[in-house]
Amino acid sequence: MSPRRINIFFYGLFMDADALGAKGVQPMNPRRSFVSGFTLRIGQRATLVPDPEARVYGVLVDLSHDEIERLYAEPSVRMYRPEAVIAELDDGARVPALCFNLSPPPRLDEVNKDYAQRLRDLALRVGLHASYVERIG
View 1 (cartoon, helix red, strand yellow):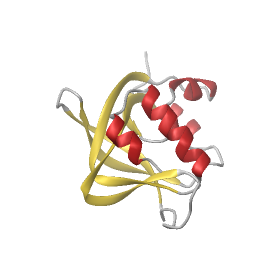
View 2 (cartoon, rainbow, N blue to C red):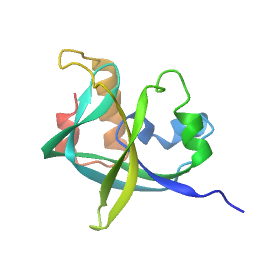
View 3 (cartoon, one colour):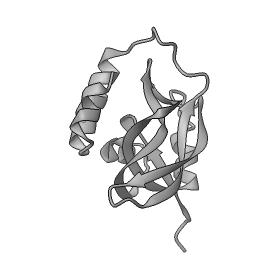
């Protein structure tokens, strides 16, 4: 019997299916999507912060509970916490999902230009809107 899979909205470097595969995580059913009511903030890493006027684009994938636990057990992302969101797909479908965010978010003066550039490159590769990609970082 296959393990149950959960919708996860990724907006940072975890959008890279190859990087997830290298961590032993096999994302299934990748779909471009966005979440409204949040904006992207990049410090040393990325997170979402509430903003009723904004939306963040990313990739919705299906992961098992074990894969989620394994992925977020790594020391570099252990401080991320799950939040329930509604992801909207390109076809207009709305899907409940989990999204992992930092609490508290990075300070506004915290900057990681290398991370922002890597995220811009990845966002283009996965086909996110060019106007959104230009605003990253």
